[in-house]
Length: 341
Image (cartoon, rainbow, N blue to C red; front, side):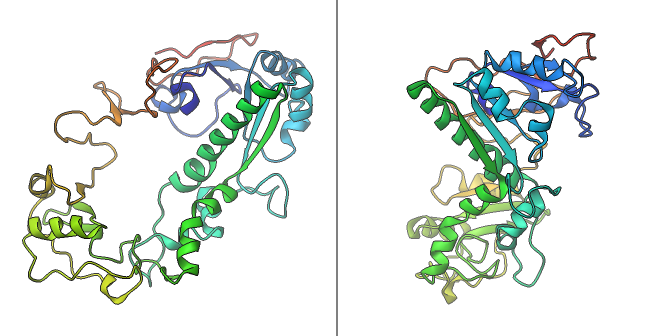
């Protein structure tokens, strides 16, 4: 989706019958801006169809378990033999080798073993908070794959030789925790969740409940922003001082002080200030922040959600041009075509 949003001509290879993920294809936003081809890779002519596409492609991305693409006849060796300049991207959870490589897994397990899951949550004595599948699948997995693929594409265009990009979710997620490991080594982070500078352990960086059960996010890290925060909150005389040490005693979290009003009231109080406060919006609710629609969302229709947008380019190759799509019925012979609106 990201590559397509940035202007790439993406052809998605679907298997007959769909992926079986339980989502209505007509509402799958990740399919936007893509063309599709239905191929049964276990059929006699299936691999040849994919290799014909590879011959004209710059990038191929696959997410099978290790060895599956090779057994199907569309592994790196076969594809690079057809197109030596191809960038072959591979996404797995555990990596292409190692004791866990052949086993099944999902985001929550990948981020658990890397230590990322264990550092998320407000209560040091309670269970970690599950951050949907954003940290592993998307941040540690897909985005790292995209960076690797784009770097390999530059190499291929410069030197005329393709690359195999091996991205594993456990590797990318572990890499995301680099700063925290540095803070641990420097004594600026405790190996307990909910007691540190950036995990909700400080009064100036966390989430507060409002009187109606809503929540406000506070990120007043710098001293001047914190001063603005407590001034607008009206608690200058009782608020704890800004922390001088990330893991010091001044990070002890007080009882929530933002519980005297609803989110709309606090949003108005902090609007236009440098207090770094924002309402926690439910995913299905379109944020209502002046002066209108936020830049991170595209306009929604009556029957579909707002669409998050990719990084903005000054002269993009194309813009988001297709709404959610429906995977068509498998044709008698594979043929490419745009996903319908």
